[in-house]
Image (tube, rainbow, N blue to C red):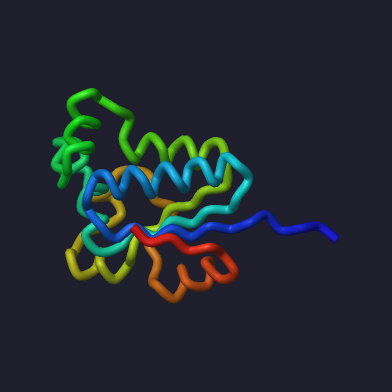
Length: 133
């Protein structure tokens, strides 16, 4: 009998750069370590993923986030891309928040697998360890 790989579900809801970075780092390392990882980006966490905000580095930051930007530390997008390339990591945007803000998938940086509802994400998160940031 084959054992299923452990699963991790991460819900990103804060626009703070440090929380986005931490959630992306945890997800990326988990996927590279053999876990199946699903990340759901919702509420204010979607703002930094907007192309215009990402390109202009319009991020809400604390002390560490300011240092990340000043020292050109690879940001959350790089961590997520690494996790997708080297492991089993999928990223979903919240369809409801996208609709409310009248944003489209094309308005976001090219990292999302799809825009889905909470019900669909909860189905994916079944039997997974869940982290919220």
